[in-house]
Amino acid sequence: KEGDQVFISVDDEGVWINQDPYTSRGDFQDALRQEVAVAEGKAKAAKYEGPILFLKGDTKTNYGRVRVVMEWIQAINIQDIALVVDTE
Image 1 (tube, one colour):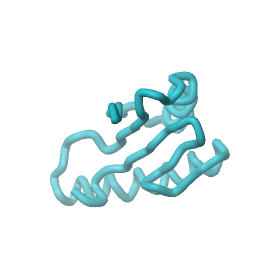
Image 2: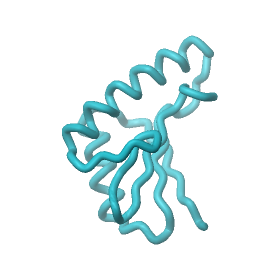
Image 3: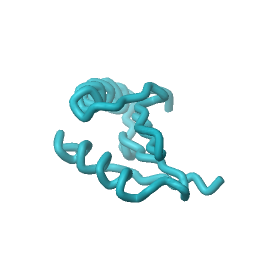
């Protein structure tokens, strides 16, 4: 449902949270904390129990870049991450 989840996209050019680009770890983590807090509140109100955070990359994205973003996410104590691969 709209707002119940946070979508992060990674490619060789950078990382986005819900289509907003980020280049620094600190800015990304600050924005992610806020987005996840809002999504968790909406999910709880809607009784949604699925994953909140989706990390998406395409098959051409360097895995090292995806791994770095995963480490940024885990550094702020978010562990439940659904990974999505765009095959197109």
